[in-house]
Image (tube, rainbow, N blue to C red; front, side, top):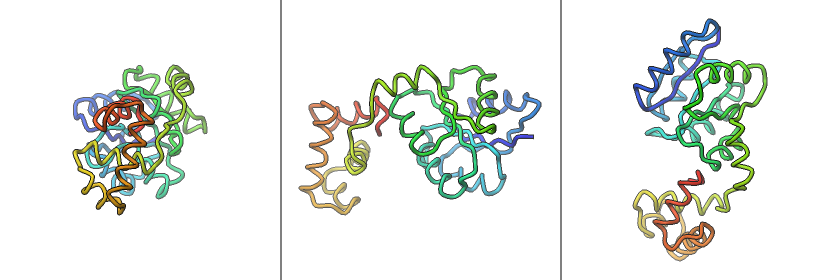
Length: 201
């Protein structure tokens, strides 16, 4: 019996997915969590074979939880589920070691099939999303530019960002300016919106 961990912040969606997966004769949902920062503890407590992670969750994003799982549980299979089929999310998920990437409007049978396929050693990616990610190309933002823009997206000013990432005000301004230029935006708010829409943040 394949044991699953389901991490999804919307209770109704999480419970519906769990009910559908529990109908599969070879699967059981061993644990459910509603926050990204609960994923590691749940894996330690329940020892699932596969973790199904939403991307946008409170506490920790599914992509950040994935990165931590890869460090702590390298053998665990991880399926990323998202409402937002953004090419940047797919690229980041694959670079972080996701075994599958599916959008939530996929049929339940397709999700169960993906779980079986990753357990067999395959990587499963929504084909239309894979094509879009290839066409889009990699994010032009460096890790540091993404960090600075991410802090700006939460309303942090230059001084607060500088303190958080241990850089000078001038260096923070330079990173923000580069991020604005690379996204083709007019200002930091527009750069944040563009980067989010493409899944780069």
